[in-house]
Image (tube, rainbow, N blue to C red; front, side):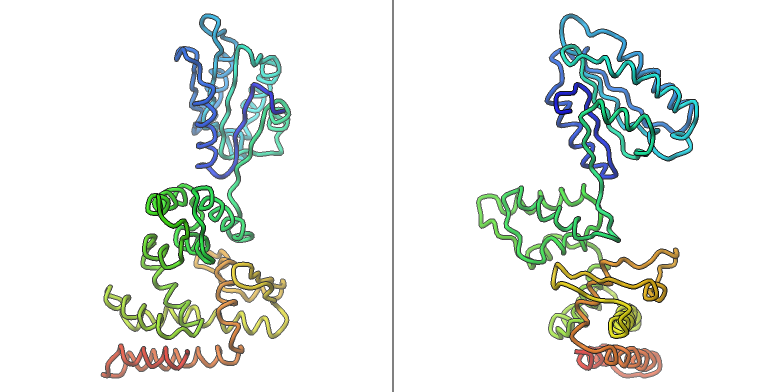
Length: 357
């Protein structure tokens, strides 16, 4: 309903919801500020929700000053979701009383803008409101199930700023930042400023230089280089991590986590309990239920990100599972050597990297 005077913005992408809502309210804001009413409906309990519903009801029934159009922004509505407050019978009942009023909103005299983050789309009120309003949904991609969608969004943001990202640029930004659209915009704005009036091409090396991330990202790059067999960058990153205070024993433990996962994933692929399709940015790891039962889990019990496992599978696929199982033994022997030997620890670790490469 493109011409509806009710505009409903919702979804799990809080930054996108806020940006779209602010853009619309700025566009349709009346000249007389007395005809622009904002009701913040972010509440913590049932009583707060009931109060905000009564406030929006009163605002909708109050005529605008003079002969101008009135704009109401029902902001950050927090009780439309599957929460204790959202499931309250009194809240649901009072929400229903708004529907006859909403049906009578005249676009000539009034516009209503609603923004909400957590919304239960099974609710009757949501379905009826969506039918009355111009509804836009901004949901974050599921990082575990579909990281490609997040990467495509980042790539689209880069192109919207007039930049031409090289292969791997969007993936790198996603690796460093994760599922944080606000941070995507901030970092992409920095890149856009750096490219203003210059070549629009954005290289992977440039992104690595400008968007540093944290030490964990450098460790990932180090492990990634080892898995790929790229000895030169692996040795360079080893030097960088050691200069930042990284201990050789700690780096062997971190590298061991990646090598063990490479051994597991490559074994699952060889045993037909997993498969890797596509290539590069379009790689996709599929795991059977039997294989999923063998996948590593975090301390919280949550499964390891399939995005990270796909990267490990892609980088390690050039060598058979036997190589990676033997690499686990090499790491164990190196670990013992670092703890018991009085030799040069950096040299011992460098010799391990060369043998793995």
